[in-house]
Image (cartoon, helix red, strand yellow):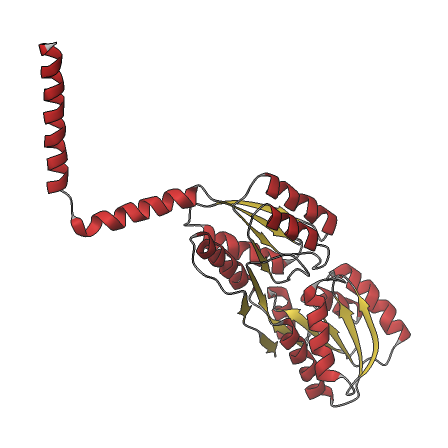
Length: 311
């Protein structure tokens, strides 16, 4: 018994010596920040963020993904990224799967703002916060929407056409995916700028798709050969329209500012594009997600800048 007591006393004394050495060697200026940084790294390493992109068959949305990944690169956060391939049902299933995985937050770029609503509501019921990028949701609670002012961009396109052609030009419009907030807002801005000042002979959807836009444009120009300008609600459709309008002197204005579209403007094929900054959007979305998960306040809507690119 005396031997056991002696061993315990020796261990206790050794512990006191080690503790004393530790305190004496500790830098009081660095101890708190080191612990805080370590704890933050551990917390971030335990976080998983689900990302649902409307389509990765479009350079614009690839740039959004790149921005998200760039902002997450040094954060030790696990990203689970899915491509909805412009299919609302597929996106719904993918988001259901992310909810089942119990991700800590969702970053969603909706295919359709109305169709995405039940998925947002399901995330709300599961207490998973949602941040939307480029397009919003018609219902459900979103922590923050990161998007350009699509209405203002539509106005910029309309004003440019009026500036170049004067009043009452014959114009066609290529619309995006029906139900997408960006489709509604860009169309509304264009209408605000041009209503009563142009002869809008056709306004048809091509679902933000280049090949579909080429086909739709061929039909529009056949029925309306006197068209003077086309407003396309994204660059992919604008580039498709140009293919259909080869050798025709028709002003085509796009929206997004993709690299290919800007190159087309430089070459004199595309008249102009309302340029967004998709990679910046993705970065802002990720930074906003991190702030929210760290308990900081975030803005309900964050606008990304626009610029009209012309020759």
